[in-house]
Image (cartoon, rainbow, N blue to C red):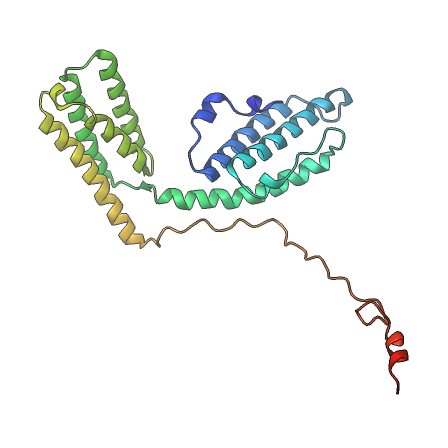
Length: 261
């Protein structure tokens, strides 16, 4: 399996900009595709083992290659086993260690993601839906070509679907409001109405975010904690001097012979 068997170009194009989030997203896609591939193969069938082996190596290569691109350690410093040296135990240990790191990354991503989202109360959601309906009316009456009008209406529909989620992405609020505000005022039947509706949406979301942050008393945003390995590193023992040695290259007996008493 090559890397495009694990992830499509469209999925690559939609990766988040955050390196850790992008890495975990790639691994998630790859794990799913690997499982789909292996379900139709019998690793005990000698004629199919080389296909299974290629799938394992392809998965490991994708993970290490992605880690190098995003500078995710320790995988950025690892090497994929050669075909001639590959053993199934290599893959098992690789996968077990990878799961250990992914747990920490996913928790990290989740904690940071909460700062970029907000839980909107139901009453506030109803107010936002009313503002969105007002914007739809304004778009219907705007001086726009049909393609542009439909594109903006689709964005409002997508934004309204975001409201049905447990937490609303602040980025989605920003983008939809920028799309509307970027249009020239001359196209609107009432530019003041549009600005008021957009402002009301942003204000409602902003109030919900302020209230949530105050109730949780979020700590200041800090750099992500270092991710640790599944096993403690064993220090390399310092070689001890041989018995009877002075530690300077000679024996204690040699030194005694040189002392004149």
